[in-house]
Image (cartoon, rainbow, N blue to C red; front, side):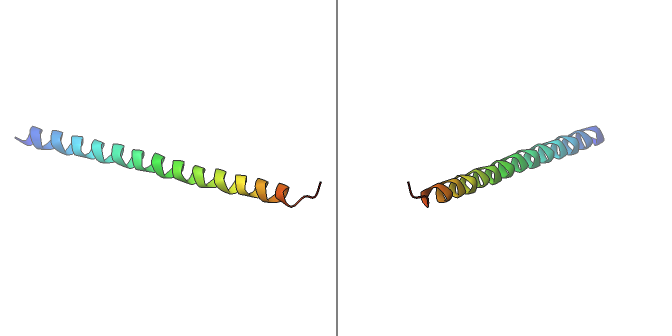
Length: 52
């Protein structure tokens, strides 16, 4: 009985760690998308003001 309790606690801990790692990766990916969009906006703004 004690072995089953310890095993289930370890499995739950590993699942929580895996979930946190997935969420962290997703959040970092969202930040990268916003950075790219801001960089693109700066490029468009800097080139749109030029007179040819």
